[in-house]
Image (cartoon, rainbow, N blue to C red; front, top):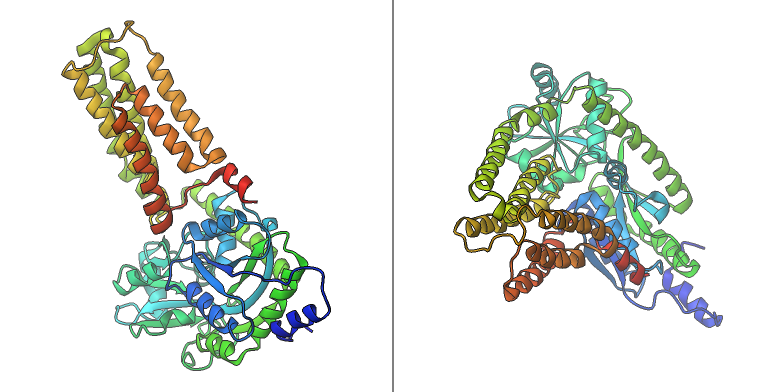
Length: 502
């Protein structure tokens, strides 16, 4: 029954005088967790194109990249569970859910609709680089002993896990370098900034300088990948069934009529000759795994990712992560810088003594906290625009405004504190920061940032109201337009937004 066309199913419902409204009655959002042009975006657009052959419904692609799919998943959860927001997902999203430790998103938050593609994992090198075969990769890895660079989309994703499994099976060590997407990692490989890119066969299509050196499959793939050896042929056992699956999800609570519609549509598309040709042409396999078995497989994948994540954590705790230690060591020079800053604060405080104590220590403390934020953000993962962008920009702005206030104190443009030694202003500034942190998950980044900027400037004794409101409004709009919509930086919308979005 599920292999009948969607049009025929809806027609039967109308002729039978079905009491509920036929689904769908409006366009459907097809949410993609990468920027336009990526592998999963191409997959979604082909689905959109072929769906026109089986339904009159319009699928509108919405790109919500960032945080390995977390932003896209939050976008889905922020909409009603009515079936009009359909998400495209891959196995890597499960790994990111585990590694991000995001408590607001779980497997049970979604209806795992269907898996339509099984794509084998592949090791890819730069054909023009000196190290471009498995034998050369193996020999180079043993010489470098952990310093060989392997590239991929994100830390903790499916490709990262595949790399770890390969290292273990081959008895080698290497360093994983994550990028904000497969395209950026491939560009780095083409620029010879790494040795191996972990991806899928379709990643090399249209890129003659890329070469697949190993494929996770029990048998060799058909053309144009017939010359690619399997791991078994290379003497590596246990890596014959590593895949990147691709499928669809919706928010949990999908109405029955919507679920039936999607099951009919997925079955029709999976059997479509154009769809099958597209999938097989990229070295993948077209499949149709329905919601129940798909959910079971997702839970199994989650358990595997959790085990790998625990291994990574234990490795870092035991001091085996050379990269982490070298990065920490490279920041030791920041300690004397902080000492100089605190020394400068003490000198300024001594210069103006207690009469200007509050007006010196409030901005000076903000400068020190901002420097600490910048140091902390340097360890954030480099995904897309990067989660470090916001704290660094805030820190820079706070340093500038605080420095201006210190200059005004030095030039005696500000009056002395009404009471010598009054530190109430400093405590107010600290409470303002605490309140900002508390408000973000409740009312969202935009509203809380607007309130925070106005309050902070008042606390810092700034009284030019036109400037205050202009900065608050301008920054909020800038964050929404540039960061949220153009750069796709993950900015929390808060529980208030979710409440009204239900």
